[in-house]
Amino acid sequence: MCLAVPSRIVSIEDATAVVDVSGAQRTISLLLMEENVNIGDYVLVHAGFAIQKVQQEYAEETLELIEKWAGAEERPP
Image 1 (tube, one colour):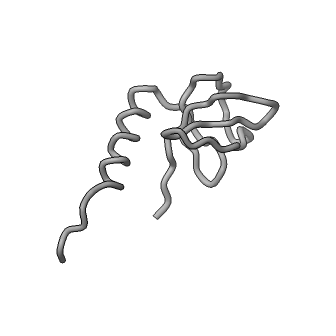
Image 2 (cartoon, rainbow, N blue to C red):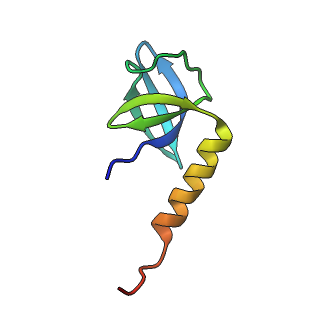
């Protein structure tokens, strides 16, 4: 399964950005972005590339769902 994770941009330099997801930061590429992004914007990140800018509300809701899913107790088969 592939998953694109909403991430908040914390810095930009040339065609790369540092993004934050729940306190974890990593450097990603902006080369696939068709629109301009700024510090504070949320983007979907897949395989180290920002692929789409998303609204803050969507990003926060999605991250909340991911956190709930990751913390869910295992259910018996």
